[in-house]
Image 1 (cartoon, helix red, strand yellow):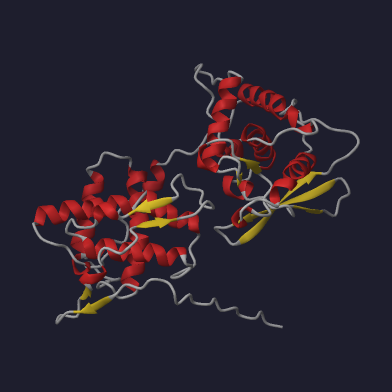
Image 2 (image 1 turned 45 degrees about the horizontal axis):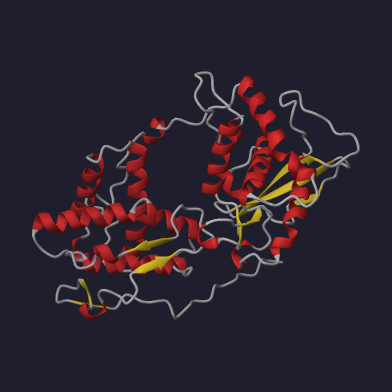
Length: 375
C-alpha cells in the first residue's frame, strides 16, 4: 500500500510583505508599513545558535528600508515553517552569520550611490559587489562562503516569491554558479587525539562523572557535559544528535549483551543507530581508553533517571530530552533548560583547566565533539 501524502497547513496569520508594482513591474513596498511595529525577531530557546534574536532596527531609515523589510518578513516566514520548512537553528544561523553582513554592505552601497536602494536593485551587479566586499574583509575564504551562502538562502526565497527579478541561468544569473571554487580544499579538518591525550582525557572524564552514580546528586552542566563527552567518545556521533537525545534512545538489539543507541539526524530527516554494550554484571574496560567504562547504555540510563523529575517542568521545546538541568544564573535562573553547544563548550574548557589537560606543545588541550568523533 502506498504511503499517504501529508499536507502541511498554512498559517494565514503570518505577516505578508505588503507591496504593489510600479509601471515597470518592479515590486514597491508600501511606505506606510515601514518600519514594522516590531523590528525584533525572536528565535526561541530551541536554537543551537549563540543568539536568540535579531534586531533589524539599525537597518531602517538608512536608505535600504525595502530590502530590510523584505528580509525581516522572510525570516519570520521561515520561523513559521513557510518556504521550505527550515529548522529554527538554521534560520538563526542565517541571522547570525550572513544576513547582517549583507545588510551592512547594502548600507555602504546606498551611501556610495547616494540614493535609496529597493528590491529592484538586487541583481548580479549587486551580488558581485557583495562578493568583492566579502573578499576585502580579510576573513578566511570558508567564512566568506558561509556568509554568502546564508544571505543567499534568504534572498533566493525572496526571488522565488517574485519580490525581485531572479535570473537563474546564463552569465547574467543573479547568483554566480560557483563563486568560491576549490573552497573545500582550504578547510582543515579536526585531528584525532593522540594516545597520551586520549588517556589523559579519559582519566579526567572518569573523575568528572563519579558523582553521577551518587544518589541525590544535583544535576548541573558540569555533571552533564562530561557524561555527554563520554557518550561522544564511544559512539563518534555529531553534536546536535547527541544534544537532542530522547528518552526512547535505547532500543533492543538482537544480541543479549548489546543495545541500539538511536539518534535523530535533522539534516537527513533520518535516525541513526549505534550498537552499544548493554548493562551486565561484569563491567569491561577498553584497552584504548582504560579508565572509562564502555557501558554507555548504563551511563545514559543513569542520566535519564537523574533528569526525569525535571522533564515535567521543561518547556515544550525541550520535553523528552535527557540532558536537562536547572539554570543557576542569568535570567533563566531556577528554570529547567537543556544543554546547548555553547554551554557544552564552556563546561569542556572548565574540565580541561581543572584537570590541567595539555597537548604536546604544553597548551590547553582542545576538546570538542568533532575531535572525539575523529578519535
